[in-house]
Length: 182
Image 1 (cartoon, rainbow, N blue to C red):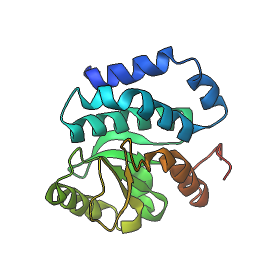
Image 2 (cartoon, helix red, strand yellow; image 1 turned 120 degrees about the horizontal axis):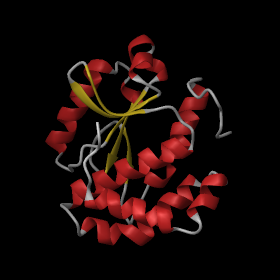
Image 3 (cartoon, rainbow, N blue to C red; image 1 turned 120 degrees about the vertical axis):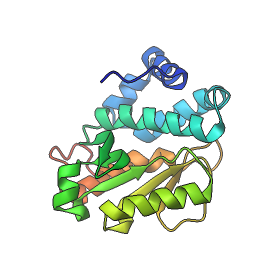
């Protein structure tokens, strides 16, 4: 299943490919610095390419796919489980079915409409009984009780997400490699 080309993802991966310091930052596990650099240098161009919430969602998805792979954190991306589309599952749906306590769902709703976000959370709660293990990536602050990361130029909390995912994986024993010592 070939993923369709997307100008935002193309721009993001072209930036990463042409970066001289991202490989070194990856080697030094400075994922927060990579995220901040990408936001600093790509955010304005990327949000001009589509509706802001969608552009931020595509950017977040692209960065997470790239960084989770480079952080050697087990994850499944863009899969359907029990009729519900999941953006990112850490480590996988098999663990979700067996032990929800050890599974993290990351939702990227591509909307800042509270009704849409709450609807998506409600769907996810049907398959993830541990509500604290549902995290969201949003383009702006929204009044929800779930842990959320904001991807924006100001008040950006998204840069901490890889560190927090690694911490979750290490604490819950889902990281086979314990690559990111925390």
